[in-house]
Length: 342
Image 1: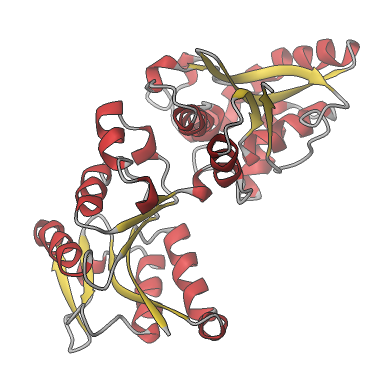
Image 2 (image 1 turned 120 degrees about the horizontal axis):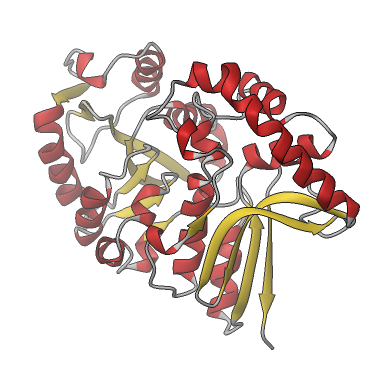
């Protein structure tokens, strides 16, 4: 049985789901000859770690307790020390994480799994890679940090995986890497990379007002608690930057042209989410409906896409043929289209 040590960073919705999945798939993993040995879990305020990371792990009962604690909104630092684990607060957790990485990185091996939503994990991840650890990312922000930090993070390509950062489960990263490794030069990438904005665009195409569609998307759980986090286009821009850097573009976020679906006077620092959804967003309905009508008159539809071509990298609404791969897209699905030179 191959045992793979793992330390989880971030125990919000994604992190908790990962822990639940690990627990529920123990028998499947056993058939595959693999055991995921979770030696630690940390959040922004604390760390819970096995008493002896070389020989012990956090058992499934304790992992379930961690999930319940986080679901209730508490910090891991509120867990009591027991014979099964050690608990550290914010000030100590950073040092202890590095201790674990140093002990396991070049001995038994250790995978750091970043399921947080923080840009501040990049420093830790860069250091643990140097210590021989592997890094698995669901968090996009470390991959969209300034180039100087990005270079440190990815200097050992075999030690980092981040498939889930782009494409909502589609093998976009792996496919692109295989193509590049085979010598196929990618000339252009066009993609619909936001399930939320994909849903919004296909619904307004059917004649529904933008304001109603966004409220419906929020009620269905498609959006962030503040839908402007999705409507700003920043999430798509991060994904576009990840893809552009895989193509060798040495650019930062400020190199990307980003179209927001709301104006600056409706930004989060100007009005609350209640004000935005209450009356302000309805002011955008007419303009969006006109853009939909204009596109339809030419046999096109509107899609929120990223375009990467040469030095160009931008995200925003584009008119696309209705029968094109992206034009046929409905709901929250993602699609990426690659163009090659042969």
